[in-house]
Amino acid sequence: MKSLKPCHTFQIDAQSEDIIEIQDNSQIEILIKEGIFQRKFLILGSGSNILFTQDFPGTVIIMNTKGIHKIAENSTYVYLKVSAGEEWDHFTQYCVDNQYYGIENLIGIPGKVGSSPVQNIGAYGVELKDTLFQVHAISLETGKKRIFTNEQCQFGYRDSIFKNEFKNRFIITDVIFELSKIRSFHLEYAALNSEIQKLDQPLTLSLLQETILRIRNSKLPDIKEVGSAGSFFKNPIIRKSQFETLKSEYPKLVSYPIDEEFVKLAAGQLIDICGWKGYREGDAGVYPLQALVLVNYGHATGKEIQVLFQKIQKSVFDRFGISIEPEVNIW
Ligand code: EPU
Image 1 (cartoon, rainbow, N blue to C red):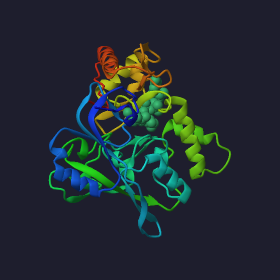
Image 2: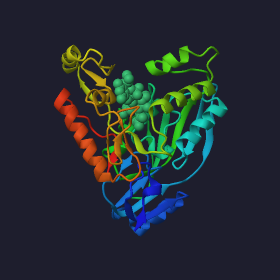
Image 3: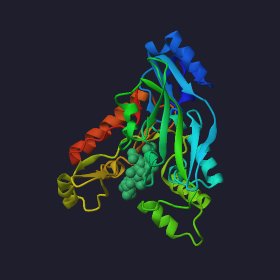
Image 4: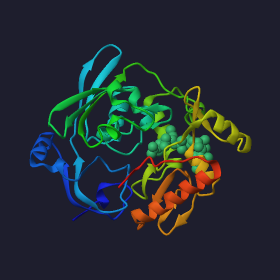
């Protein structure tokens, strides 16, 4: 058995039968021929979105392929092919350095590029789907390459086809991004907008980078210091009518419009109102600065985090009649 502790950010002391690192896509073909994907397997990037509540009885595959290549360009856009194993934030830095616009609001998100389409990572009013051009993947059943267009990925809020119909059926090898060469920013998200208003100089990508990192660091734990997987729950989407009823009792409830019928609430606020912020049971806790984030202060087990998240779910449901679902993958 091999320890999974260095392979994921929650720092849970779980084990797996084997861990294989992919440095080159040709290894995938060999693993398919060896039948690895016919047994129990789990593909990870940095493991920044998983909670192990038990050992993994199979092979953990870690994508570590590297490369950022410009594959096309016109007067407005640049198309970059990025290997799945690139650190997401190495890629965002590359874009800041080269003045490519589009993913700057996603700066500071832990994880690797190949995992980013799976849950359509998002922050500060921008989602991956806004700049993703294609996903290149290999079928684990046939070994054949397949290209997914943006539309074929069926992106939704923290959702894609790779979490649903094609879960465990493809390994993502590269992501192609369409980024703008023309200066343009997305500053609609209230928390970001108010910070930008305070700046007394023209906005640049590197100034925005600093600002986003400052906001993130003021709310989210540093995964090098505290075990966590970022937001533990998804923000719930509920009917407007239910929201109006709740709003009469809780006038400060935050909401984001979805469409005519639905709104999205801030799960962190609901958990906060239920009094969980800063709560700690042994080494399992709710981060004191952002109630949506569960943390492992050192030696929490995955089961202890699970007990805590289920208590939180129950308390939010009992108070608001809303089910909040984990955003993090639970094994
Ligand atoms: N809030 C509270 N109490 C809390 C936490 C939040 O009242 O303890 C309120 C805030 O005051 C704010 C609202 O809830 O009015 C939203 O909070 P925040 O801006 O921190 O964002 P979030 O909805 O809690 C989402 C993403 C984050 C992303 C931020 C910024 C999800 C599940 N989470 O959090 O993504 O960084 O927006 O865009 O959608 C992640 O996915 O791991 C992640 C960190």
